[in-house]
Image (cartoon, rainbow, N blue to C red; front, side, top):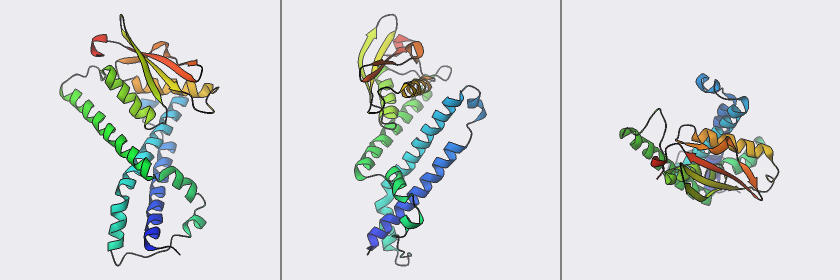
Length: 237
């Protein structure tokens, strides 16, 4: 027999799942803007759509998790709120538990989202400050080494579960930042994964003053390694 709190928890989760499903479907099925399509291959378009769908559903799931306790308490306080049973949801919706795992955050995942949101807001403020100080040239963002590291880690590690590290920096005619990415189980011989990662990094860097040297990521034992170069070394410090 479900108690009132369990009923409202399940109902709230179902609303979260429904909203995330709708957004995911929109991002995966809709076409990208025409100006983007002209410069992207079919594989790049697919990659962008998948990453955008993951990012947007993660944000929706995270925001709903942050508001969950307060919303449910409001429901409980409303004496005339419909008291319905939700034990039949899983019977009606065969993918309920599968998508609950995908879209409903645990307490620990909720803490991670809160930290991710704070980093995202900080990065957004950083770009706004750059614009205000007129440090933008040809729509390129001039990033220091620390800002580049934080940017890549906030997207690749926090959002895409890709663990990137930066073991070395070299200063010669230009600034070179080395990176390594640990290959997870099942990715040791996955050429498609390496190719997708190269495209992803190139897309993330296209509006910055950094580039992926030789446009490639190499393999080294259990890692994928590469080098990033700054166009204007004086801006990298």
